[in-house]
Length: 122
Image 1 (cartoon, helix red, strand yellow):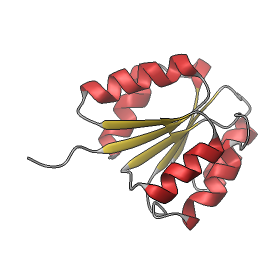
Image 2 (cartoon, rainbow, N blue to C red):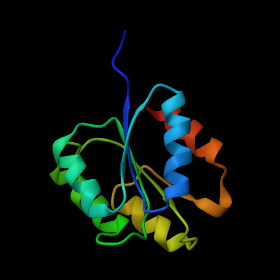
Image 3 (cartoon, rainbow, N blue to C red):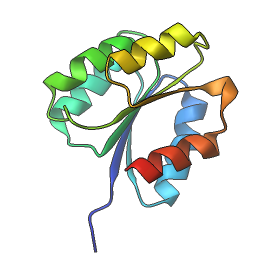
């Protein structure tokens, strides 16, 4: 049997984290949750992941800083997806320029669509 795929979710929204953990966990993923960008970068330095999901607006270190620091971790080539409440196109555009594979605006997409998109890509 192949090893389970691992996902790191970096977000301070506990409800979203719980929902994503349940969805990805039911699909066989090993899920790690970090509540802010600083904890997320620490996890990225210590553990290898198959995919990362991050919010943009968080305490201690925002998602833009996370995107800037990912290349300096052992997960430099891991796809990073952004899920944010910041609905401005310029925020998603900046995230993609910093290396995000895709940016989802929470109010414009269903959780199921996010999970399906990421699962197909991994």
